[in-house]
Image (cartoon, rainbow, N blue to C red; front, side, top):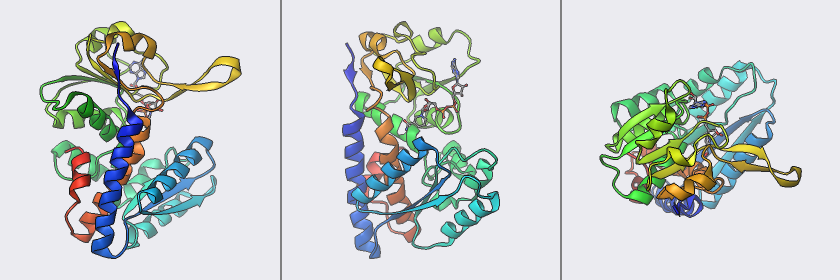
Length: 300
Ligand code: NAD
């Protein structure tokens, strides 16, 4: 059976690296790095994420500020808030919690974020830097996926990677990050023909679809590393809901060499990488070197 990849432990290690970096920034600047989070509306899942982000930011010795706007706020007011945070020298990182309520233009809001404060790595500038292999902020969930794969397998050079899902948030940047690790990357999606056969080629499978148990055990090459990004709420026993990934875990654990559980795999890594990006943003903005502890955990 596969070895479990412990995302909670990995995230704790990255959080600790960020905390170490934050202390160095505070020693250099006289203030810790600061992350501003913008939450629009009252989506319950978003509220949980934002609360966890705030808690872990502070636990890592950084400053967390939260801005809450009502669901019926105007586009202009959201943009104006982001512009104010752009101009605030005490703010190092800006994260707009997605999705925004219907009627708001997410792309415009995200593009308003100054690239040097774009700790979610979702602006066109950050995406362009990723394509070019230039320095810049990398998206957090894909960064966490690379971190876990490296932890399981070591150097990834030459590995064949199949990423399932081509979203801007996860699949597409994940493919580019594994390419930067010298992997041979296939980016599969809903129109891919014979996805099971495509998957069976992979040394590393990244599932980022949002469909419970889509990836079956016999899609996995024996010994492969399976990184399950999916988070799906399904009905469990006694009417209670539970979280499952995109991979049929009970099947895949029999064939895989390494596998991430859901929950407790990629999930906790996202905030960890957000904290690391925030320290890096604070360092670059202040023109001090990015602490080694943080450089070591971020992808190239
Ligand atoms: P998305 O809906 O934006 O994209 C899904 C992608 O899957 C699309 O590119 C689509 O082409 C592909 N797809 C859909 N059906 C398919 C099929 N049958 N076969 C192959 N490909 C198919 O979703 P997303 O934002 O990329 O998120 C994907 C999953 O990852 C979701 O479950 C989400 O909850 C989860 N997620 C987790 C984290 C985290 O761990 N912190 C962060 C972001 C997203």
